[in-house]
Length: 242
Image (cartoon, rainbow, N blue to C red; front, side, top):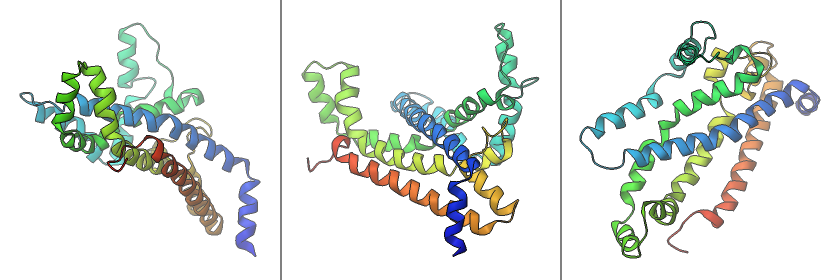
């Protein structure tokens, strides 16, 4: 049956493993970076200061901008010759790298974009922070806890359900990364993410059966990792039933 033969061809194709490796390396680094960045921003803008609504809007803007538009802007920002980032580095006497044109800097380039767009979970964190009972902080204050202890023993445990949600969503998003990777590419095979590889097989080489098999493999990978994360949540996700 030709359908199963496609799986055999995939598992014997070095390009498949390279695309999977590129995607997994990105996921391992981008997911914690974006979760931590969104959490830090949420903690920073959680208090009611004058004009805080403006800052919240600014921080949230990256999540509503078109992916293609973001990719085009970052293509200019990361340009090694006249890009904004290297121009800024030159002010401090630093010679910037070639970013997307250097295989060693392709992954850091995409991580910069991931951190910039990490505000997608900002309002989810803000809603969760508002939902934490003030009595818990008052009790912690009575016990002599400082702000660090309050964050560690009150805020973070109460946010673990949201952290779990963002972890799963981040995992799915990382493995489905396509738009900016397709628009920008990268030196060699370092910019060929799994979805880009799948797209090329389907619409460049017209190997629809092969691409369908790739999609099923991606589904199994995401499902397996999600089930593992779901299994571990009983050890670290706070529940009122505990």
